[in-house]
Length: 316
Ligand code: CP
Image 1 (cartoon, helix red, strand yellow):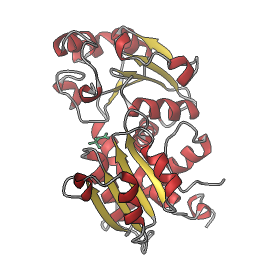
Image 2 (image 1 turned 90 degrees about the horizontal axis):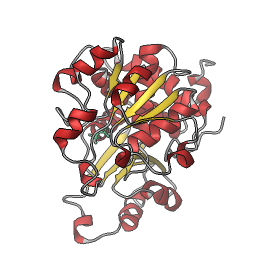
Image 3 (image 1 turned 120 degrees about the vertical axis):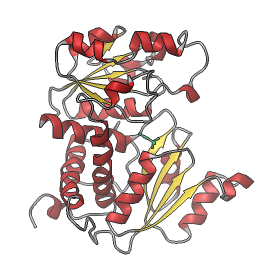
Image 4 (image 1 turned 135 degrees about the vertical axis):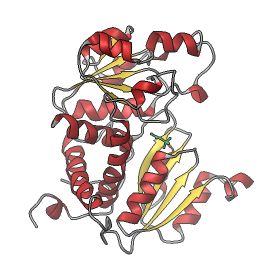
């Protein structure tokens, strides 16, 4: 298998590559459980984390993954940089690349920014979230968490609940889960579902506008944050009504009389898309997702930096 040096999205990522990243992530998860959770795998490589948009989980997780792999890392945020003096993305990145780097991890508010970068620079590019487009490592860590829980992805029924229209997490999950043979549904108010979803995701995606129907159908609910910063006004009457109609709470889960697994990419609007009680409950694997994020990002960095597939495939 030929592995690209970039991870820009899961839309065109083959099942074999996703499976390889997930398998490699399991090996790094074992490394992370050791007393000294560090390997020299990326010693001598330099990774730059470019975060033009705020992040807690993704940025810390990438930084930790790079340190666990012994890479040299630099983290860049727009505040305090020359971006605040008007420097363009192109100039920023060209200058950073002139310092001889191997890999760029980028989060940007504009869809397509990582793709533009990948055309401009020699270093590999990993998309850490671009506008409403994709967030591939989030979907990979979600798939790793589901594999840990259910042993497989094939045939599993996952409902993405909430603001699908503005969610890069939803898009990457749908592409990745479909590639791995899972069944996917979207559930939310009609105003928060993408109008072109059949064109974008194919005719196999189920759609629910009643959350109780989605809960009855699903093995897993991946509950999405309301992306208020990306929405125009008037897409739903009020947060209170949204919580009453689509919020996931104990009464709804108990009424379904089944053990549905609850995921959320974070940050959570507690009491809106997810009740406080449920976010920390026996239904939730939210902190497992965060833990798996480090292993998935180690695997992605390793493979994209030219990691030895023979070793990873167990043929050492
Ligand atoms: N899930 C996620 O992308 O979270 P952050 O915005 O905190 O990185």
